[in-house]
Amino acid sequence: MRRKLAAGNWKMNGLSTDMGEVAALPTGLGVDVLICPPATLIDRMVRDPDTFVQVGGQDCHPNPNGAHTGDISAQMVADAGASHVILGHSERRQDHGETDALVRSKIEAAWSVSLVAVLCIGETEAQYQAGETLDVLRTQLAGSLPDGAAPGNLVIAYEPVWAIGTGLVPTMAEIESVHGFIRAELATRFGTDTADGIRLLYGGSVKPSNADEIFAVPDVDGALVGGASLKAADFGAIMMALDAAAKAISV
Ligand code: 13P
Image (cartoon, rainbow, N blue to C red; front, side):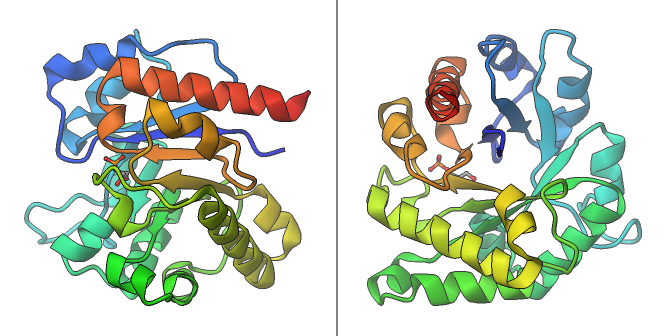
């Protein structure tokens, strides 16, 4: 049984004064909780005695060190205390020209220091309109996933670019079919046991108001939440919706 995961991507948001939002999250739920704050807050969040969450980075460089001003290596993310790192987010692909090959090398770097990679994949609006979604995802998976993927080192987040920060969400049937497709692709390459263990998150305009229906979709093992992860009231409500979905499956 895959344990559900509620993951928050704070993107370029969050100061030390926002740490209270994490401390205010509900505790004692039967789901994993991961917050990926800006790199400046990783160490503080890891050390905060009031928080129980796992902490992740939002990016890393493929090299362990070197002359790369402004970059942060996987080793540094791990050294700060993070357990996960988001890689291949569409905002990195768009803003920084990241290719599948680069994302793949970043995942290898993450794995070399035992970080769990949270690989983001997803189609643009134009690709969606053109009916190219599955082709895009197949290409991204093939190009960005190294050999050796396993439930313990990988989480995949399906994030349609057109759904990020827009309030738009695919239909539940679309999410179900895409997540089923991703799992089938993983099974073809890594075998059924591995594919069955890897958690698949949905990301893109997840809110307390739509969390219940999204979490009821087969093959959705949680969410990667942007804007709604910044406030404890919203993210806490999403965590509770996920906990309810987990309990509904286990009865
Ligand atoms: P929003 O939840 O703000 O749409 O962002 C989703 C996202 O990009 C998470 O990585």
